[in-house]
Image 1 (cartoon, rainbow, N blue to C red):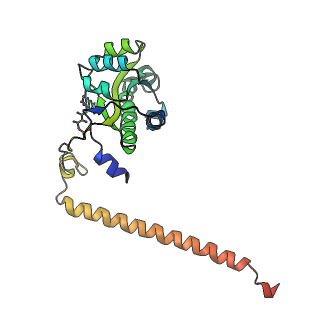
Image 2 (image 1 turned 60 degrees about the vertical axis):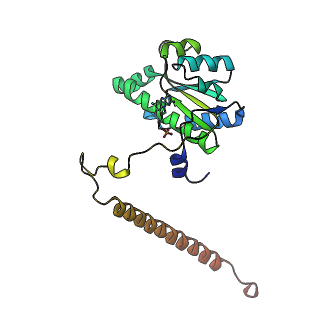
Image 3 (image 1 turned 30 degrees about the vertical axis):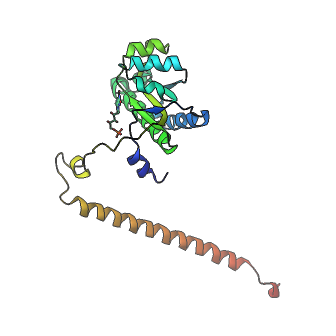
Length: 224
Ligand SMILES: Cc1cc2nc3c(=O)[nH]c(=O)nc-3n(C[C@H](O)[C@H](O)[C@H](O)COP(=O)(O)O)c2cc1C
């Protein structure tokens, strides 16, 4: 798997999974990616419930308005938010907005790590919250945000259309679009290439001065 942008762009929401076991090593890497996500003030107000057991996966799939195909995935991860903690630190904004964003960041990290391991994922947001809470014995103050299905894809669907850059990017003001995105993108790559060249040059300079200093300190054998 290549560079991060390739991983981001080639990730797909998987609909059908092969009934295949996922190693704990892979699951733990995915969870680890989740816990390293950014969160408001680093409060990390999330918990991840890992579900391997077949009957519970089936029950969760039913609670997800009968999205039964996710029960075939090797594992389901129920991402839970702790809104009270968000509220304690940042008031209503923390409770309602940051908490959701924190969990979304953790979820996306997990999707990308899974994809980098050649595993497929589905971000499931549509489910009966009370049903999921009861199935996983989640206390009243905690809110399940998503169920992530992780497994070996049966097939990978084609990429759904994504809006082009110029449709979603404004400059400085709402609706102020870039006029010539191709030129702008070319400019960006020129700027980046120039910056990379500068970094390379300064590293070479630093390396050369270290070499020169070492040379100065080494006294030739015949001069000892
Ligand atoms: C908040 C959220 C909720 C979602 N809920 C579901 C869901 O319940 N079932 C499902 O099959 N996909 C769900 N998805 C996946 C989207 O349908 C999918 O990301 C979208 O179609 C774009 O496809 P892509 O992920 O392959 O780019 C959800 C995605 C998000 C971000």
